[in-house]
Image (cartoon, rainbow, N blue to C red):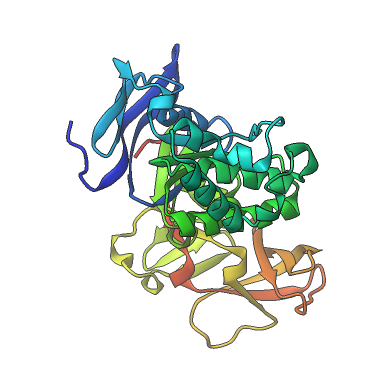
Length: 368
């Protein structure tokens, strides 16, 4: 099987079944040297099984995994975890309670029989990077959760593994600390450029840390993209709904217009409109929609409606607007200063350039 030559880590047709149940189905993915890639999806989508196969804890049912072009996993042979030159950090980030911070971080270097001076130099350098140098002689029990997590990261990175694997490492931390740590993980990555695979179910975590995000759904890859493209150009309804929040506008082409529940728009307003036929669907983000008291001459899709619900979330208002004569609900967010009352008549303006085309409901669920 040919490996992509500049790939650091490649997964080719990787599959895993537990009895008759497929957990991972024909996953193809190549990571460049120094790339940070997240596997993102709901629980049961196959992301953790994929990570465990990369780590060598699990044998694939089909397909293979290669590092630097050398196969390390296939159904006939699995190189054991300790011979893979990888580091893995679990949710529990098991650091050894009977060793100091410095000893925890030095552990992997001692196993590699490095000289004492080099070990000290490398341990101090990484403790400086994670801002823990002053705690070098403390024991884990004296540290906060965030500090313990930094020790686990330092210990995994200091050995300069070929590949760093992270399995939901922040899920045990509280929200504020999680936010701080995801920036820390990205900062460490920028400092050491270690090829990293990060499993998470938290889309904002994936957005902040990753070069590319792999969205998994029922064991398959739905889409792989950088965070901006994934958010603005989701290719499936699942991706559109999982990354951030969105509105699905489902309509059908009728002559030279598209008919949606409660409003119609000119077909020509869309780029590439000539090939649109039958049922069409779009994903439109709540913060991409403008709300106005009356219609103006500005270009765009204009929707007349009434406010059905509203909620104040501090940083923004969220409104639910029903287009006139329809049961459709469109979510719209506005700045905190834009206040409208429930049942107020409003106009929405949608920029068709920001409406991402996704498969119609009837077409989804068929593996592409």
